[in-house]
Amino acid sequence: MSPIDDLVPLLKKLRMSGVLQTLELRTHQAVEDNLSHPEFLLRLLTDEVERRDGKQLDQRVRRACFEHAKTLEDFDFHFNPTIPKAKVIDLATCGFIEKKQNVLFVGPTGVGKSHVAQALGHRACRAGFTALYTSAHDMLGQLRAARADNSYDRRLARYSSPEVLIIDDLGLRSLTRDEPVDLYEIIRQRYERTSTVITSNRDVTELASLFGDPLLAAAAMDRLLHGAHVIVMDGASYRNPPPRAARANTKEARS
Picture: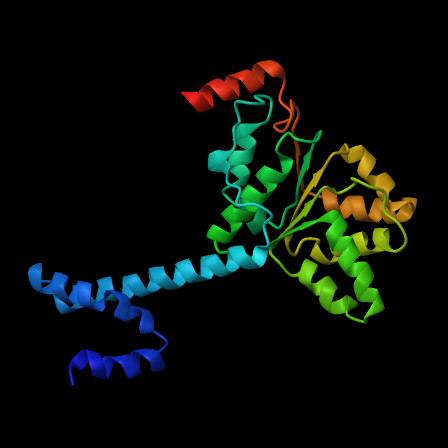
């Protein structure tokens, strides 16, 4: 039996079986480059750390439930030059998450609000933060259903606990029944504990009307906007670009 055969059960017990994936390569490298024992061990353990980091990143991205694999690298800031690129890039450093601040992207449909919001979510995952993406409609529908099967607290915790919660298309429709209270409760529980990213076709001044009750609206908006970054995204729709932009995009794709 070779030493490697003896290593297998030990590595499994230590939950380091991934070391076996690069052990042979690193062993040959150690012989050819005459590596010292500490250098050999350092490279082997670095491989294991990188493997674990990659696995954890995959898990965070999967659990975030992003609608699309959107990144800032594939976002075309030139299409709508009024979008504050420098501000968006600054948010991508994830400093707002460390400060427990909120971000609101407001503007007409099709300008890329969802793309940028999800891209920030991907950045957060890469930085080691937990994230969750949901449409406002689905989130409030899930909470409404949870009231019926007595799973409300557990479902509410799902939206309250991630370090970054991305709520897409808030205000696309009016809130009904208990939805204003549910939205307020999420905002309240996340206030100064975590970060919430919201996209909306409505102006910030219009969001208060979603709650119906002025007192509830004031309490929710005061918490939501405290220290928040409000990014106005304006311009043409990516989905239905003006004829000149459409021709330019087609020409660029062909070149």
